[in-house]
Amino acid sequence: MTEADEKALRLQAALDGELDAAGMLAFERACAEDPALAAEFARMASLEEALRRAAPIEPAPAHLRARMAALGAPPRQRPWLFSAPPPALAASLLLGALLGYGGGLLRPAQPQDERALVSAFMRTQIGGQSVDVATSDRHVVKPWLASRAPLAVAAVDLASAGFPLIGGRVEALDGRIAPTLVYRRREHRIEVTELPLSGGAGETIATSRLDGYHVARWSDFDRSYVAVTDLPETELADFVAAFRAAVAAEREEPRAK
Amino acid sequence: MTASDLARRRFAAVALPHLDAAYSLAKSLAGNGADAEDIVQEACLRALAALETQQVEKPRAWMLTITRNVALTFLSRRAPPSPADIGDLERDGRLSAAEPGPDAETRLIAADEGAALRGALAELPLALRETLLMRAVHGLSYRDIAVATAAPVGTVMSRLARARAALAQALGAKK
Image 1 (cartoon, one colour):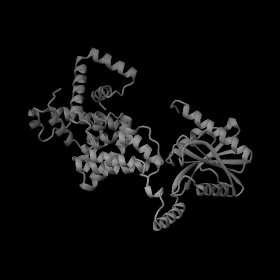
Image 2: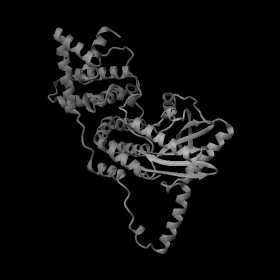
Image 3: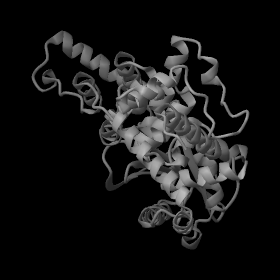
Image 4: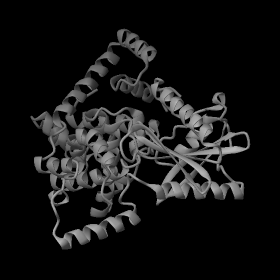
């Protein structure tokens, strides 16, 4: 790159607000010493102004906006859900409900997710391969999962609470990639899987027992979590409390790595 | 699949505020309003689907990135891209010497600065045009543009410089 190119790029970066404070200061000093540079800067700035005037952001046509806004609007309540439906409709409703259950349309209650996660827990317990990335460093686990899963993962460190992180893996649930964190306590494991929010975020923790394992489900912010473990229920509750506190603390942190 | 409540809420918060920007960019890239509407509609559907599982940090840059990608797919289907669109025009590495367009001289005389600029903009190769629009009109940072166009930041900077040099030349602004 020639010196002239570099100078041009620096001028452009100043115009675009891409110089840091020190760079901007140096550039202003250079402008003060070099009238030609100052003039070039003014010329570029006025070109930019002219361009913004010539190609402004124009409003989308009203019909397009209306159609797209409808995409974001909640589905309209169907009135026949609340009045007595005609028999044929009632039959199709029932059928729909049954199909919907099998097809995962009834999202809020998702015991099939929990069942699949318990199966995964059992499989890894027998197979011995519980993590795809084995490290206690959450700064390694987090980007590893983030590069494979669509959700930004809450890889929190719970070693101080007695639950060291041992790694992470991805589960495929109902066609979706679900990031899973694996923690350890003594010879036991706790696997936390992050899911898109189902139902509303709330304080409630639902625990259940499936095939001898304990399962906890809860929602925070805009995520749902399912934890599966072979620990006793009281220790699972400790874990969930520690995990939620750590996630909340991470949310509070200013955006820093 | 019908969109979940969460995706709809995110869509309303993240995508809809930037509908005008998306439409404007699509129109500038496609060259007409009718195609721009198709592009925006497709971009919105993709955005809605992505929002099922995704959180967005920079909604404007994100929305424009989707729009740009849809527009490029659309344009590649409409007509084979011209060599000028494919080439990066970076062979000689010089940033200030843009080739004058065929009717740059005619435009020199054009009284209307805005029309001249729009004409010059429309003649820019796609890679230069999208970069300049994202920066000058939509206010994206170099880094966001680099992500949106899948190009290194250095390439974004040199494309911007070449695009501006071409516009300046078309306007007849002499150094």
